[in-house]
Image (cartoon, rainbow, N blue to C red; front, side, top):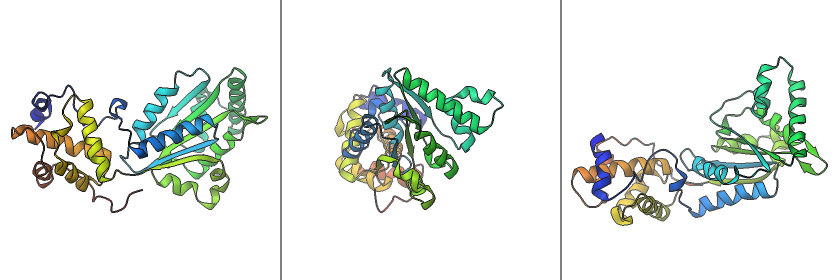
Length: 282
């Protein structure tokens, strides 16, 4: 089957795989939900929101949006961006994200907090805001979230010197809503939940990726795209997996397009593994 994965490119006229599993901003599809999420990220930055929250189910497309956002703002010399991914940190480690050299110092947490405060004020005095972005933030403990809230309280007059972006799975929303974190929730000035795709969006998403890869948007029939939606529940990561396999099947059978029967054959053969598609979205 690996032979099919590499060979279907010429067969369908692609210059690259349209459904690679690696997040690639070049393939970003601006659905209404993606635009809403991105607008919220921009709003949080423009309004200097203390805490901005972006949540979504596994595979819903949070990472690719975040990558695009970071790429857009990283040339801004008025921002200092610290990006933390795939972590399960304790509260005492949070300060080290902003000042890695603190790991070398044998000092207590109170002194570390003072050093970070001095760093934030220095950045502000030099004309820069500090943006701390944490991906997979659902892994943060309540203690860690509370320490982050304390960091966002550091300000000079009315100007806050640190903005916090938390990106994570729906549990992050649930965590923030707990009574023990009411003060944290009050500082969340911008938030958005990225839902799974509806059937019509899946069809447009598939056509978009086919075009970006250099192929015809009609390589997948409408019925095939609908079957993809039914089998994946509208999860972009699963859509990519199933479409990639379906293209390989169609190539092996020397078909010029992917039909619903092709997609179903992939599912019937058991090589596409996915959880039961969700019955509700949002």
